[in-house]
Each structure stands twice: as structure tokens, then as C-alpha cells.
Amino acid sequence: MSAHDELLRRLPDGTVKQRNPFTGTQVWTMPGRGRRPLPAALDDPAPLPPGGVAGQCAFCEGHHLDNPPERARMVREGGGWRTLTGLSAGQLGDSRAELRRVPNLFEICSLDYWRLNHGVEPSAETVARADAYLADPEGREHLRRVWALRQRMVDGRNDPTADELRQAALGWFGTTHELVIPRRHHVDGATRTDELASSGTLTLDEHRAYVGMSVQAMADLYATSDAVRYVSVFQNWLKPAGASFEHLHRQVVAVDEVGVHVDAAADAVARDPQVFNTRLLDVAVDNGLLLAANDHAVALAGFGHRYPAIEIYSLSPRRAPWLMQREELDAMADVLHAVHAAGGVRLSCNEEWHHRPPGLDDAPGGVDLPVPFRIVVKWRISTLAGFEGATKIYLNTLSPWDVRDRMLPELVRLRAEGRIAPLQIGDEVSIGKGALPG
Image (cartoon, rainbow, N blue to C red):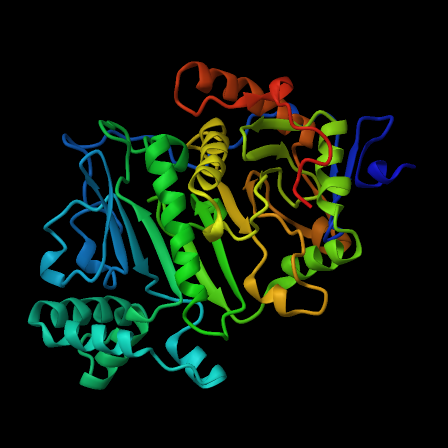
């Protein structure tokens, strides 16, 4: 058996066996199952009232005061984009936010987490911003409103003490768990409830801005404290993927551990700096699994994941997305946009970002470890059950070749209709073995 066969092989009966090159996860796909229709994760469509449903959920226009104070918003200006920060409660209605950075109402790592476990106190800028917002009557009422919305889900209380409100304000203005939220809940002109605005329905310009704002949030969270070791970025689309709302949003979360994926990738490249080529890209090239590419990014049907997956790799020698050139980051955004558009609005999926955190440079032998920036899109079309729990062998409905065969016709169609960037698709992809920067 070759090294590549260990990672991805077809048995004589058609069974596909996969192994993740970094985590060792085992995955099987049994023959014949890949022809089944993909399950739709939306309820049967119902008509929308005339004019749509602006204000349907807490992330929609008209509900901005139901969210903690914004960190930033992006607005259209003169055919381009402008980022606004430091808005007061009374200014939120003065501009139309196309994208917003908002603290998560139920953060993973709270102010007390950082304070009590790491001795991290809010910065002077955070304290000044919180106190100024509290001093403004509209701002204070906004904070009280959001505090009450959260607390009613916990113990039913509506009235915070002055100290409780100030601590909440410090936590929100110094948050380490943000949401990046595009404006639309449904596509413009929608007449049915299932016509949702997903990543794939955004324009190329909007999706580039959406990715760019997420990357800026990453950089800002890394700058909050030396105790931040990793910033996790992910997107859950529809309920099977863990979404609380059907309104598109991405989460950006600072944590104090790098996690098993970063450790596994760092260990692998420390042993073999070319491992992302030799045990991933080269396997995909040999098996005809490349999906789409441009000058700075490539997408392939992944293998060794618990769910059918598509992986998008940056070809930039800059490992951190916030250090990339604009055209490099936009290239990643365009390929990611095409992957979502081809999957479709009704397909539930997780989007996971993986990158080399700055702290790896401080580890022995860690300087310049070639861990590429990559995004994995996982299709949540199956449910893990007892077999997986007992054996740690995961059964995927679709093999990597099934994923490829479903994606390529859609990518070609969408490109012809001008709905995605003019990417190289399938056999047109000119990227070969060893293309990931070492």
C-alpha cells in the first residue's frame, strides 16, 4: 500500500476509506449512498408578507438595540466601503450597516474568565468607552435593555444594579467573542421564507468585505492580551450546523489554548515542512479532487473529515490572514464564495478557519512553520450515532469523488451566469503538486 493509499483508497467493492493526514480520523463511505439527494435543512417554504420580513430576528435591521453595542460597522460610501466605530446609541439609525461587528450575548470566554484566570483587566480605552456609553441616557438604556434580554433567559430579572450594568458594559466593549453580521436576513425581493441570504447569495464585493471584516476582528482580538493564544473563526449555517438564527453570521472567538488541530498541524510540519503538499494537496491532485482555483487560492474535495468537506487553501507565503495582501485575501474570499454558492442555500454547513497563531513563533523550532491559512466547509448532511461513538470510524454519505461530482457542474453553471468569480474549475485548474508554499 502506498502512502497515498493509506490516506485515501477505494476497495474492490466500491467502499472508500479515508484517513485525515493530521488527526488520523478514519472515515468510510459505503458504495451507492452518494447518489441520494442531499437533505434540505429548511422547513417547507411559506409566503412572506408584502415587503418582506425586516426585523424578523435579533440580527435584522430595526433590532440593533437588541444587540450589545457594536464594535464596528461597514457602510456603503461613494461606491466603496467605509468602516465606522465608536457610534453612540443615538447614532445607530443614522447609517445603514451592511456589516456589523457585535459582541456575542453569550460569550464563550467572559470578562471574568480572563480576569480571574489570567489577571487580564479591561484596557483604559475599554473603560473610557464603557463609561461614556453609560453616561449617555440613550446608551445607558441600550445597555439596560440588552442586559435584561440576556438576564430574562437566565433568571427572569429585568433591573440590573449599577455595578452589574457597568460590568456588563466592560465585558461588551472589551469582548473577546464577536459576531460579524451581514445586513440581509432574506435576499432582496424575497417572497418566500426559504429565500435566505447565505454566503453564496452575497455579491462578490459583499463577500470580500464580510471576509475582510472577520479578518480584522481576528487581528483585534489577538491584540487584546498576551493570554490570547488562538482566535477561532467559524460559521454555522442553519440549525443542523448549530445556528441559533437563520440570519447569516460568523463568529470570532479568542481562547487561551491553541487546540488539537493547531497542535497536530504544527507537529506534522515540524517533522516534514512539506506535509501539506505531500499528504494533502498531492493526494488531491493524484485523485482528481481539485475543484476551483485562482492565482492565490485553491479548493479541493477534502478527505478524512467526519462530514463531507471542501478545503480552501491560501497560496500566499504569508501565514496570517491579517498580514496578507488585499488581492490574496480577496482571492480566498472568492473561492469560498463559490463553494457556498455551489452548495446552495438549503444545505446546512459549518465553515471553519484554520491558521498559524502568532504564538507558534515562540515555540522551539516554531519560527516560520509552514502552516497555511485554510478554510474547511463541512456539509452537515448526516448525524453521528452509536457506530461512530463505539468505533471512532465515521460513516460519510459522500466520498470526496461524490463531492467533486456534485460541485463541478454547479460551479460551471454559476460561473457562466456570472454569479461567482471567473475561477479555474475542475480540469482547468493549473495548480499541481507541491504548490502550497513551504
